[in-house]
Length: 352
Ligand SMILES: C[S@@+](CC[C@H](N)C(=O)[O-])C[C@H]1O[C@@H](n2cnc3c(N)ncnc32)[C@H](O)[C@@H]1O
Image (tube, rainbow, N blue to C red; front, side):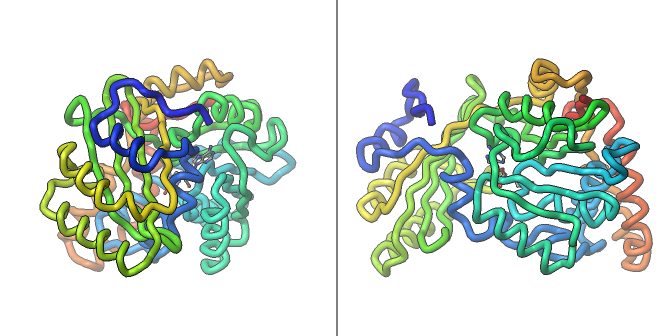
């Protein structure tokens, strides 16, 4: 790992480096390996059956249909092969495998804990055509030209070396193979943001401080792991109470520097481990350019079916439960396939 950059540290970052010098970590080890469930156990279609009465489930189902609709015709030796880069707890791989029963779907994630959760979820749901391996996007355990379709949902931007992962994706897709990517669109509401989260980790309590900057487009995420002793738990709970009234952004608590430092001072004496993950952030247009440079023949930005599906769901739910249930599958399949072909600046399709 390269050491995190030293430029323009916030007062909280400076204090963190004094009180609990952080080890530079890749995101899989520093973040995803530390939590029992990445998605808090509520992934539509994986942790819970689709519920047509919930708008968000319309968005998830449409996105699976979007990914599935990008499977190109043909296939190597009669069976199509699909890769999900960084599946987390099995999304979209498990839903995609269910939607494409004639395909073998492989999820590759560097975090052994995530791989174990993916396997357990696929087994629980009886999805036999999804398998999972521990591995890095920058060194995929897949032969040249072996895949028809690759998908990445909020994972390519988590790679320490995203360009290397893009070159690998170009290597493993066959000519005419397609890559479909959902990634963050880096557009902060202010030039810079600081957030904290206080959560349960695996055998530990976690305190996270994230500093996001628009220019350079970057996120540095510090994690302190505390033992689950009564004293540490009390301090952790008090910190949670102290930050409870602050506004939220990105599902986290927005802080002014002072509050984050206060919490850090209180929790640092308990620290079992301290790490920092530094990631570059980008926009779909940057990604499309980078994919062309990585060896894709074609790369374009497109619309995202999520909002249209949520709106359609809202309309059907307003018409009543029977109408929502009857429309769910057809409407999400149609929107997934159709909206993903529209021009936009939310997702990326690349062809090998
Ligand atoms: C934000 S989660 C997304 C999970 C899932 N795709 C979803 O949309 O719910 C990012 C995932 O990328 C994985 N990841 C991190 N670095 C990676 C790398 N170098 N290669 C492949 N996956 C990676 C993480 O371990 C994590 O499971």
